[in-house]
Image (cartoon, rainbow, N blue to C red):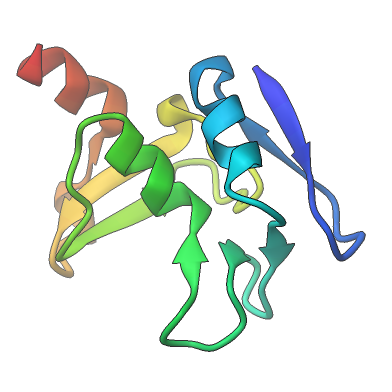
Length: 103
């Protein structure tokens, strides 16, 4: 487990060791108004850290919800991310489970 400091003094983000380097090389991260950790400033240009973690884990987050299991938007470890198709949040499955099934 590693931590990434946010650029706007709004805390630190918890991430897995194997994605830390990639995330920090991407540049500065900020906490957006609604609490998610993002890069970019315009709504069309925002890149969400939790979606990048999902993609780095082999899951294409396009058209999927990527949710935080414990409700902490600053905890972007795989164990804390849930993947759900469309708006069916009730059927969310853990990212770790998806990776195990895919392997």
